[in-house]
Image (spheres, rainbow, N blue to C red):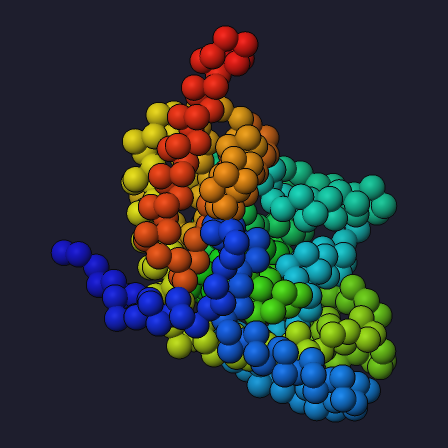
Length: 400
């Protein structure tokens, strides 16, 4: 029996009308930054104008008064207590708060993977250089099955393992790892878990409680559509007090999760936080399950049409319920960077070249405001670019 489509009752053309027009490029790189809905854009503009009238008063005494409500709305989306949420600028800042804030002694171990975000790996290796902790790698392929991935982490864990760094969805290929199983593995061994949810929150249904992790980090300007420069750090109640803040708080002693909040930066652009609440409400009205169903449908739509292009190779598992918007492909025998450039310069279509380890290709990540007809345009342009570049390679002196 076919499963009901969670997005079947959503008017996607109405959703499309709620977003600003993307021009001049067709934006197929929403995994980096998604455009905010128009209601979010307007709320941010209004807040910035309010700030300009009386900056010192309106930033901290007016706009910040709405932040508890924003946290409460986010808590409903991520399934945690509002007192476990800190607001910051992006996933990198939230991840570094956890990475540099977890107390570790020399010789204690942290497990990472080769597929973690580069700055996340760099932060852990910086602690290794400065403090003598040991960073070990759980090595696996992104096309491996869930059991193989769990076994890769389990194989390198020892009695000295204190932290598992888990990238929920790879930004390289869109592969979703079995984070809940990894968190259970860690908990059974008394190990903390830091989950990088930059690509999963607001793209897939995610529950902090169900994952049962210690830290969950995301960027609100990706799939939720908050203004650029908004992130969320969720810290389990039981580990808040023993985690150091990244920046020293202004008012000692620090108040619970507030010690991780954005205001420890000093002066910041509080107008950007004014866009969080309308973005969270907009997302809730559609629903995470509907968003996920729609972007999964869009991914399968364009991939099925692109399979007929000679040399097309997909580096993302397609037949899985965790498939979302993010996928990586390459064309055998062609330079992915040249294909990317020709799509942008010749057809005004924006995909993103990605390269890591043995993988290189173009990342495609449509959001809910995209139409199937626009993905048809992308596939048609891709076929044309591939034929053009293969023809050039076949000509004498063309390198083919």
